[in-house]
Image 1 (cartoon, one colour):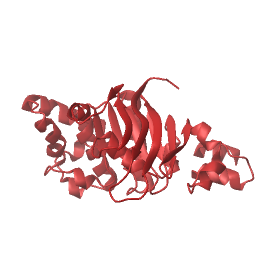
Image 2: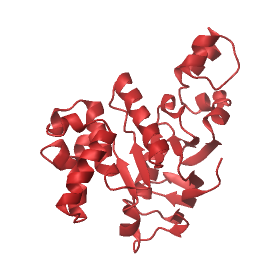
Image 3: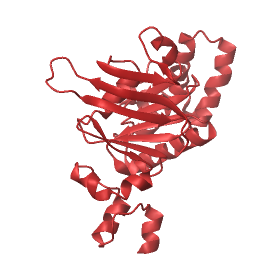
Length: 268
């Protein structure tokens, strides 16, 4: 694994006002630069809180968060946010334009990008996410997967170094999820965008480069998917469901093993 990292949590703790316990309790990890990292855990493990802290939507009580070795503070937060984009579970909450292309252009307008430049960049990014044909459609009239692609385009047009997907596939059907995951890999490899995918669905993590597993506000495991899934029993012990191919493989009496669909078919 490349040791170069882009975001670091250093002994970070966070507690919601009025709660008796810390949602995040003294956690430390590094996000590899230019890679696809999956942050996983059951509901209440703290994974969405991490996304909000990365974006500066909330303030942690202890520790440090660094972006490219620079500590994130209220004074530099506006500048750092220019490098990080986030796509939420429900993309409709991010729509502001009457058509797809107007919605994608909104962020550029906020940065006072000249009209001529917007006219060039918006069509290009819509082609990148395979939504150019729907550029004049109303965002609300699109399918769930198409809405997420538009939301990603609205982030991508701002040329971020990092895109955070916060449970972005949870409202999609299996075909929509698979399509979005292919797009994520394309953006990671061809655009060199660091991807942080926050999810409770371990099936989505199989193609990522690195995994961080949370449990009860603490880091439970870290490593490549292969390293993590070969400890399959430890994941089920904390309430996570193994990806389908690995679950079937274990039901057949085999030891925990990193396995995708094609490898399972070959074995059967």
